[in-house]
Length: 361
Image (tube, rainbow, N blue to C red; front, side, top):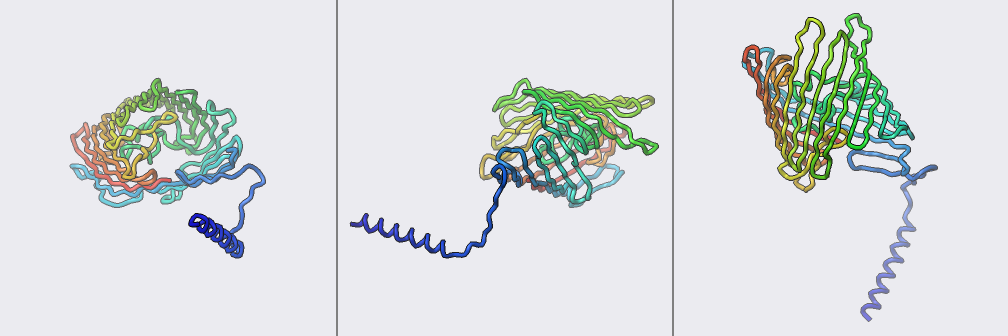
């Protein structure tokens, strides 16, 4: 009897619920497609695409808000002590069958960071990209600013890397090997005309498992007046431990002294996560627990580089730095760095404290 009454009550409630829903006015519209089904993804940004992956559009961006205090012993060229927006970027990217595009703008300065079109019809083995993009030179430079372990790139990377430029690049990967070759506009000819440079990079990961990675690479860039730079790189991941090293050797042309330098960096994820590696570069650590992931990192650099972050300018110097990062979620990161260095020419020292709140999606 009890069971029978209970079943009747459930049936009556179900009929009443359906009747009430049918009586309510419908305010929402419908979304239809005359092609493949649509898929909306919210993990790592906002992406809308067709189920067959032939068409998609994605929105994303990052904000890095820093507190920076830097000074040197001689008070020349100066000191810094301020809050500042280090980067504020928004992007839209998408695919149209065999083609893709990306437009990324710096909201703070109003300039374009990336603005290119890419042909993907040859598959992963060969992609062709035309427009403003990162040129293939250097592991640390090609690792996104939101994914590097120290809050700022090394003085050697700042001095020798190409960064973004207008150009044409052919790049791809085959197994654990990646390659890229490019021609780009260096845009600094004395007569105001355009000059072009060339760059190339190749990497290979002879070890790549779920627990460990060993990576080696080489890069080259050639610019006007016989100037060129060679670079060698190596990196490894062993569980929660990761490290990388890069060496740069520059031929600065007739009448100019050649320069070189290197940096070594080691990090450890205290909470046990592994630093991701994909396509010849590192990615951001993703926390596996609700309390986030914690990473400690140390770096040493030596050579002719751009030591402006510690107020020593472009000089031959040495520096060491320590940092800690808390990856609160996949999108939010808090970081703190301390860097100390000294010029070789006059033993003038400089130091920097930097803290950052980062939101990237």
